[in-house]
Image (tube, rainbow, N blue to C red; front, side):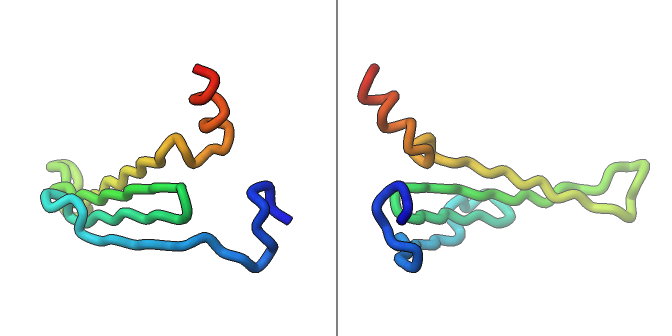
Length: 77
């Protein structure tokens, strides 16, 4: 039994949305239950000292509600 009461084989609802940031080279939003995660990828130009090697920057943002303690702390404030 999980802490939220779900049984071992019961999964939370999953939603995936792509292309959420039009200016990004790639982006995605994933929601699993109350957890909300955004991922963004940016392609960078190669540096002058390494013209044969490109760069990829990836950033991830997780909602603070992903931690069960967040609800308790927010309620106490």
